[in-house]
Length: 380
Image (cartoon, rainbow, N blue to C red; front, side, top):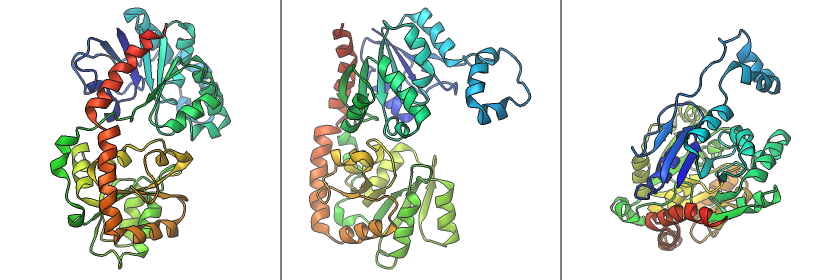
């Protein structure tokens, strides 16, 4: 079976491919953004370096692409090799059985034209994060989303919510189930990194602050109650510039790691020492960092846009849900209500350990990933 994976370079795709290491599948990867080689299995044939100009850069071209994107899109076939052209060349060369695109906007929109030209090739689309829930709100995106979903044959989601959304938006193919975007975790290997609840002295904060992330609201909430939680160290990871600026300008004794400062294993080590993990956004799928908090025993306080988070967090039992991500006072109250309640914190750790074993184990999710492609071939 020849599988062509279409994605941007990311740790999640690398981890996904790792699950297929011992299979007989012939794996190919198309560098859809033209960013270069993926650090993955040597057996994966990679298609990179395809972005080439047909004509030298024209004065005002960048301005045009920003201000009049529709016009630029019509011009671009004459200026440079497009994704659709590069993909067609790959199809003609390797004749894939399955094309698997990860993510909608950057990885599925650009290949739609070619996929419509080759309707007999099976198309699997992995819906991650904000692909549908957020972008459906914009008319230009909604049109493209519907076009892709009408052509896609198979769907994988990281939460049940997005399967329902996909159906509402016109998907009539086969849903192959819910698997976390980063697949699973080797639970036994992480066990030694987990401190008992009573020894944990860190409040860990996801520092995303952009059009979707609301990390600043967490910081503002913690700032107002810092005298009450002074025995705990506040550590922020993945911090955007606004978050860093807030900490500096208010002279807060918070430890800040920027977007690329921590490796995945370093983050997991921090999770294993943290009493609370707090993540807050106005849109998301099933956050991988939330799953990592569950695996590592950090009590999660997490926003719940569109109801995705509540698929794994029962409010007040194994975590708490932020109902309004814009409310600083709500986040403050949630932290104060839970941080001194060691009975709930202990029970949550036990519950989340069970959830990790049932739903987040590497071996069982690895089998689900392998079976995903087998099930596609069964659907003739």
